[in-house]
Every structure is written in structure tokens, then in C-alpha cells.
Amino acid sequence: MAIYPDKKDGKLTGKFRVELQNKKERFRKRCETLQEAQQVEASVKAAWAAGEAHTGVLAPVSAPEALHTIETVTQEVRGQLWRGQTGEVSAWAHMREVGLIVGNNVSLDKIDTLTIDRIARELTKRGKKDTTVNRYLSHFRTFLVYARDRKWMDRTRFAEITWAWRKEVPGRIRWITRKEEAQMRTYLLGKGQQDMWSFIKVAIETGCRRSELLTAKLDQINGTRLHLWKTKTDLARTIPMSEETTKLLTGLIERDAMPSKRGLRSWWDRMKDEMGLSADEDFVFHTCRHTCATRLLDAGVDILVIKEWLGHTRIETTQRYTHVKPKNLEAALAAVGEMALRAA
Image 1 (tube, rainbow, N blue to C red):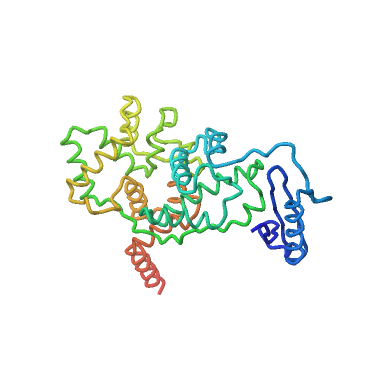
Image 2: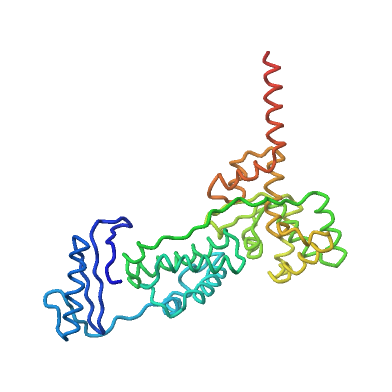
């Protein structure tokens, strides 16, 4: 179909656009009514069929415009888009998969709501969770916005796309118990993995993301404080550490003993099996971060302080931990009751 509802800033204007192309000739026009648009479309097609130009509105072009596809734009922006961000590698991994689903040689101007629906449907079919599907779509949208802003994709076409965001249901927040932590230590030290245990212990004590610890340098440590300048949320923050945690982290950096991602994953899985937790899908390295948060909450640290400690951009993200620690709410109620009794 060559007739489209006209939009401005993502909102329907009530007008209609006629877009036609015949070899090197392109025709575009906005019409007040659908009937007018249909008449214009028929007139232009008839003129082309007769080998005539549509005087006054038909504009010949001297050469075909460059075709911008996922592949050509990727070649152009690789190394610029997401550059230096902690999620750069995963973003491009997502784009590779999206390209295989959509077709790397498809023009960006051909991408529409049905394309987005197909991506979401295919990812779900491959077993991706709703949260993961949303990450894929988010990266693809960022890619298209980058292309749109450089006139590699029609702005109106982009504005017409409806994104199939999946509703994200908050998952279970898993943390490591003191008993489990002791088991982890015993297993790794028993296997001669002192550095691996040190890395995990630092993660539990600081609540840092894996990428933040793996890239830590000595100049980020000032006394017993770890300064994080390059983070997932682009929010710099400073984390206080105990003397022991500072010693462990400094030692890993000085000895160049940081684990590789593959090594960390491998030893985590072996440790998980040894602990009888192989079926627990929530027991992953990120659990160390959850553990830090819940222990801070147990210690009575204010929720706003925990938010800053973890580097959350939204307080709602931090508040998830209050929902899984109901005993803290009960303790608060008891404290209020005691205050009332003393005041009576």
C-alpha cells in the first residue's frame, strides 16, 4: 500500500501521505483526505504506466539514494554507538541476533510494527524471558534512533512504529545466606581457588556489578574507598570498604589475578553443583549484589543510602529488597509500638 496515515511527532494529523517509487523516480505528497490521496495515487500510477511524468509533483532523481540496512548502518556506526559502555558487547550481540531475524539487508524504511512483533515473537520462541526480550528491543530502538537522527531512516516511518514491550514481572530476589557463604568459601579454598573466592567475597561485601569489579584499577582505590566512574547507569559512585575487603581487592589488582568471565562462570557452576543448587536458576553471580543489598537493609541502613550505594537510578529498584524482607517491616511496627508505650 502506498497511502499512509500522516503523523507529526508520533500523533495522527488526520491527513494522508502518498508515497510511490518507479525505478529512479519518486513521488511523495500529503493529502487532506483519503479520497484525495487515492485519486492522486491513481493519477500518478496511470502517468507512469503511460510512460509519462506527473507534471508538477513528480521529481526525477539523478541517482538512486543509498540503501540503508541493518548491515550497512552497523558497518558505519560500529565503534561509535554504545562505545565505552559496559553493555557494549551485549548490545551488539543482540543486534546480530535481531539482524538474523529481520534480515540484515532489509531497508530500515521497511521496518514497521509487524517487524517488531516478529522479533519479539521469535525471541520468545527461542526461550527468552520477557525482560530479555525488552533488552533486545531497547537496543534495536536505540540503533534505529541513531539511524533516524542521521537521516538514514525516515522520521515518519520511525514514528509509526509501535514497540511490543513485554510486561516485566518482578522476579524472585535471591541472596546468599551466611551458611551458603561458608560453603562457598570451603569449596573454593579446598580447590585451591583463593583468588576466585576473594573476587566473590569482594562482590558480596561491595555489591558491585561483575563488570565494575573486573575493570577496577588501583587508582580507583583511595584508602578504603572504591571510586566507580564507569558504570552501567553512567552514575559515578563511591563505595566504602572494610580493611579486609580493601586488602582482597588490592591484591587481586596488583597480582593481575582477576578471573576471566568464562573462568568465573565455570567455577560458579561447579560450586553451585557441589552445594546441591544446580536446579536453582536464581543462584547466579549477580546474587552477590542482592546479598549486599539485603544485608545493608538488615543492618538498618536507610533505603536512600542503599540506592546510592548500589547506583540505582530509580528508588523503585531499591525498594524491591524491602518487599522480600518482611521481618524488617515487623520490626519497624514493634519499634513504633514501643515508642507509643513509652509515650503513654
